[in-house]
Image 1 (cartoon, one colour):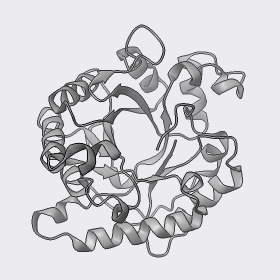
Image 2 (cartoon, rainbow, N blue to C red; image 1 turned 180 degrees about the vertical axis):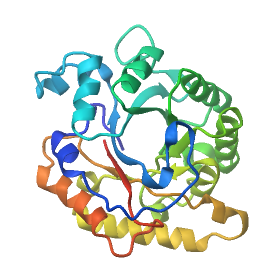
Image 3 (cartoon, rainbow, N blue to C red; image 1 turned 90 degrees about the vertical axis):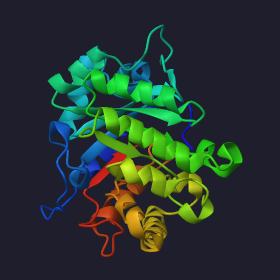
Image 4 (tube, rainbow, N blue to C red; image 1 turned 60 degrees about the vertical axis):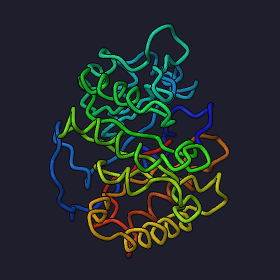
Length: 290
């Protein structure tokens, strides 16, 4: 669902997202003091080279990694999620070496930001994806996110998706049991029933549904309402060990095109803030933007 032109969350979401109440759900605190149920505000970065080029020409003061990290921190961002892989292959971001590296981690930490890496997961080389994730975590990444989309449905995986999803999550957690791990699937579970939601959820600490209302053709408020219904129905369907797959929901808002009015991003955040019947325990205490 994510486009090649996407790279950074718009300023409007950063400003609008100072949002949640002090009443917070409790959860196990992971490395770096991360509470999956109270994750705060985050920003997905596809190309670091574009983000550090004046945020695509929009912020003159952002000209390198240090100034980019400082800018994010100044807007109240708690964490960034940076592309490190495509499947099991390192992502170079247009350069000659991996985009996600120890210097990037150090610069984020120096600015007071948490930093997670992510791969657009294909599931056809699970040991390779485990290696990519654990390499990033060994560099000091505060967490890893599995961007699992259509490549994990039965049309691509056959009947192997559930076992491979468990293998991927178990492999990462075996190496780093107290490091943050999340997955980012489609928001409409009923439309993608063969995607292994419960298997990913079993080992992950949070789930980040891709609530791309603009591309889907919904209003922000309807997107949140639909997410609540979809995820509540799914949670209620789980029994036995699979109830352990119910994890804090940290929605991803859409901010990848100038066609999206800033008011819609504000509406999305407000819909999460004011949700009277959220699908996640304690309400939505985290959001990030693509």
